[in-house]
Length: 307
Image (cartoon, rainbow, N blue to C red; front, side, top):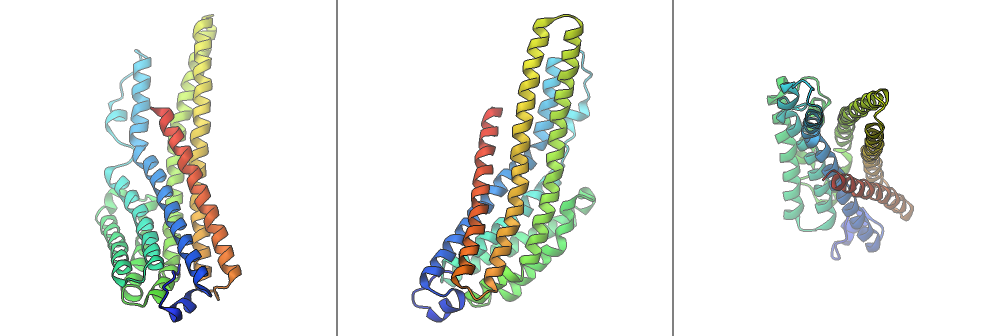
C-alpha cells in the first residue's frame, strides 16, 4: 500500500520501484478497501437480520396454522441480544476502518489525512474493546469476545508506530505490525458467521420439515389439490434454502479471501517490491474483489426475492 508522490522520490523508491508501480499499488489498496466494505455490508445484514428472520418465520407458521400454539418467547426473545449484534457490527467496523486507514496511507501524501484515518481506526478498536469488557456478562462465550487481545495490539500499533511515523514506515507498520491481529479478528468473525449460517439454515430446515408433514397429511387424506399445493411450496422452500446457503457460504469464502489478500499485502510490504511481487499482489486482491462483488450481487438478489 504505497502511493505515488511526484516530489518524494526517496520515499517512492522505498515503497515501489517505479511511479507506475506505486500507482498500481494505490489502486490495489482501493480495491481491497471496496471489497472489504462490500463483504462487511453483506455480513452485517445477515447478522442484524437473524432476529427478524426467525420471528418472521414463526409469525408465518402462526398465520398458516390456526391450531399452532402461541409461544410468545419465540416472538419476544431475540436470538441475538442488542449487545451481541452491536459487538459484531463494531468488529466489522474495525476491519473497515483499518482498510480505510491503509487506503488513506496509500493515496495521499497529506499527513493530516492518513493520520486522521489512523486515529479513526484506533478509536474504532478502542470503542469495541470498551464495549466487550463492559458487556462480558451478556456476551458470555460467544466467539466475538475472543478479540480483545488483537484489538489492543491494533490500538497500540497505531499509537506507537503509525500516527507519528513517516508515511512509508506507517504503511509498513499498518500492514505488518497489525497483520496478526487483523487475521485473528477475521478468523473470529468467520467462526461467528458460521453460527449465523447454521442458525438461519435450521429455520429453513424446520420450514421444509413442516411442509413435509403437511404433504403427508394431504396425501393420507387423498386431497390432491392440497398435496400439489404443498409440493409447490416444498420446491420453493428448497430453492430458497439452496440460494441462501450459496450466498452465505460465498460470504464465508470471501472472508477466507480477505485473509489471502491481507497476507499478500503483508508479503508485499516486506518484499523488495519488484514487478513480480506487485503482480502477485494485484492478482490476489483482484480475486478477493471479484468474490466480494459476486457475493454482494447475490445478496441483493436474495434480498429482492424476499420482498
